[in-house]
Image (tube, rainbow, N blue to C red):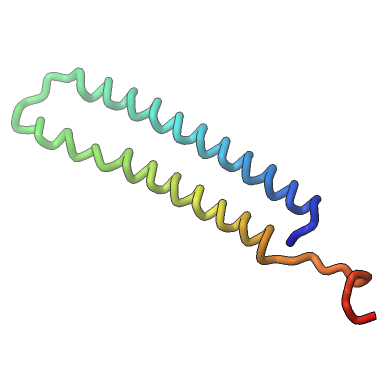
Amino acid sequence: MASSLRMMMIGISWIVTMIILAFLTYLGAVFQKTINNFLMTWDINPIFQSDVGLSWWIPPLYYIVIILIAIAITYRCYQEVVVITDYFPDQGFLR
């Protein structure tokens, strides 16, 4: 296990990262709503209207990237806390 100070720093960095990712998710929703409101109010020729739906793959891809970043950050924090150990020379078994 890591030391208490290290675990506290890792926890704070994890919380800050998740807040930033939540804010980016909110911004993605705002931008997508604005783009949809702009594009969907036009009167489009029916020939070109079928091509408007091609932009619908962008939001799922954006949110999948955010979820993958959250999983990677969570795993990295787990590694720092559980896998990496702080050794102190005065607490060893060889005395």
